[in-house]
Length: 136
Picture 1 (cartoon, rainbow, N blue to C red):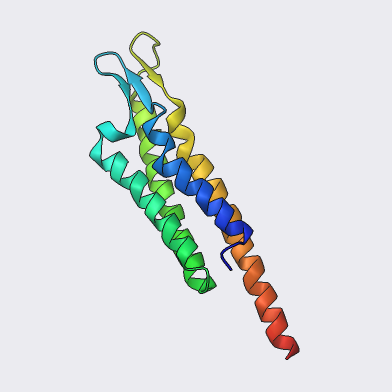
Picture 2 (picture 1 turned 30 degrees about the vertical axis):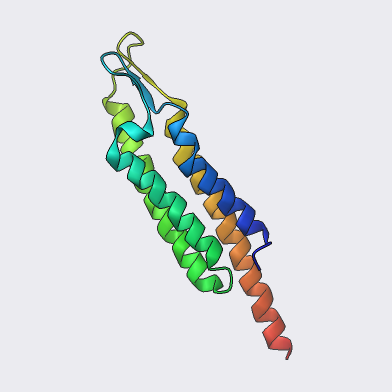
């Protein structure tokens, strides 16, 4: 059913990846100023990919196993994005006059948490359906 708790978790992931990265900065560079997601095509496309996968997972509410697989794929995509941000933050210099890390680098971490919660709720629903099938 679409009114399950995993839908709420996936809507939060959609909002986190489709809206928030374009309003909070990812990092600040001295020569370029604040860097947002829309300034880099790769980062922007990965954020939109995460949002699209979460929307597809919501629409797969009748096929819980496929929904679970799509969420796993979304987790891998978020881990890729998090790895890129870690690599980027390690390459930024630590001096405050040169560069600064932004709060936008934590968006994949929050998305991963909500995707794990959604997967847990999907698994719980699947186990409930299997237990009811055993009673028949």
